[in-house]
Each structure stands twice: as structure tokens, then as C-alpha cells.
Amino acid sequence: MDVSPITAEMLSQMVAEFLTGASQALVVEEGELLFDFASAKYSVSGDGRCVLHLWSEERNVVRRVLEVQVPGRRLRLKVLRFGQAKPLVMEFCGDRDRRAGTLKRALRADYQHLLE
Image 1 (cartoon, helix red, strand yellow):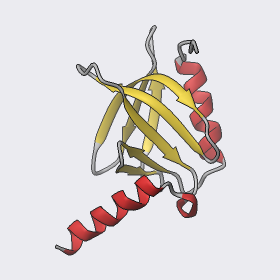
Image 2: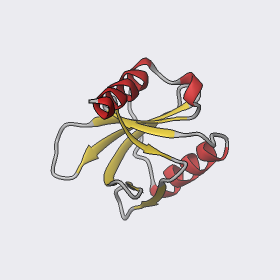
Image 3: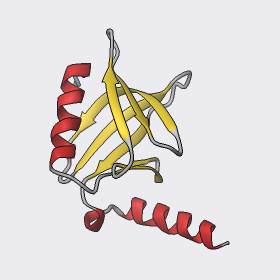
Image 4: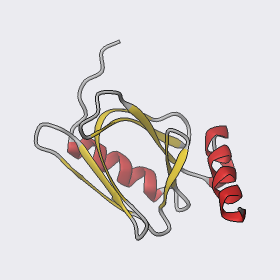
């Protein structure tokens, strides 16, 4: 199956529409909770390549977006870290109650680390 490249305009519109309907959105990358959109911000840019920039007081992440899928109440992005060849999966989860098992495990691990 061929996937056409995503443009910055397309991704910007998709993320904006997704976040409009998901006031409690979270961002998870490879099972690790990165951002809670209660306090995070984002921007999308690109000249030939689609680049997603996410930031909050705790961290700052920049990823090149290769592909986007919308399974249910999630926005799944296939992304590359700069300088890396292996793509990662980043997910925008729209509702905390409908979290994927991966996100639940990541949140539990973060909480367990906090207790230690």
C-alpha cells in the first residue's frame, strides 16, 4: 500500500480538529507519556518535510512526521527523531478513559517511579 507524503498544512488541520474534540488529550511515544495537552502546546511547519514541534514546561520534542492514521479516538503518527533512521510511533490519545493498554502501563510506571 502506497502512502502519499503528508504536508504541514494537512497535519496542522488534522491535529487542530483532533484537539478540538479532545479536551483531555495525551501524547504517547513508544509507550512513554510525553505530553498532557492541559499544559502542552504544538506547532507544525515544513518546507518539503512535515515537522511537528511539541512543548511544555517539562520538555520539548521535535519530530519529522512520515505518516498519519486515525484509528478511533486516536491520532497515530509515524515519526522520525532527527538523525535517526528508525521510525517511531507517536499517538495522540483523545480520552483518558479510552487509553490504550500501552498508555495505561506507561502511566502506571511513571506513578510507580514517583512513589519510589
